Length: 133
Image (cartoon, rainbow, N blue to C red; front, top):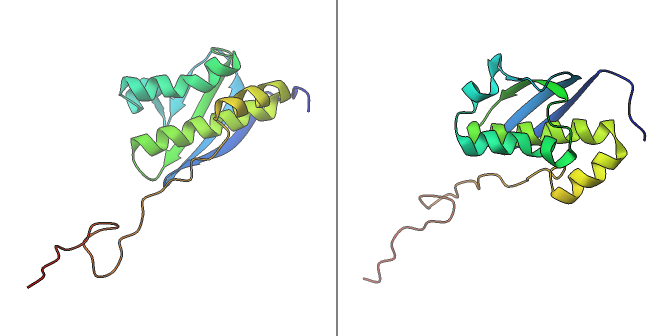
């Protein structure tokens, strides 16, 4: 698949219980998440760096505007969902970028979720203290 001529592409990304819907258009590199600037929504430096990684890896930093809607989970899961969605859009736009992003691990959905609590114990793995007598 060669580069698409459309100016607008969309994708959905998931992480934990978070879902990110992303629209990407050709532009100057502005990122908006839930109507806020990306630096106001994701405030930690680590999350801000993670958001830029798919663009840096693909070598297209500052060439696209991103408008995202994220919901569910916490900020960490939402950040991961955003990265997954953006990576899927970039991979769909160019076959060469797909290989680069896949090798970097951005196209794989991280399936790790919180383990459920089991009956008769206080948590997922924790057990009540054993008393011999």
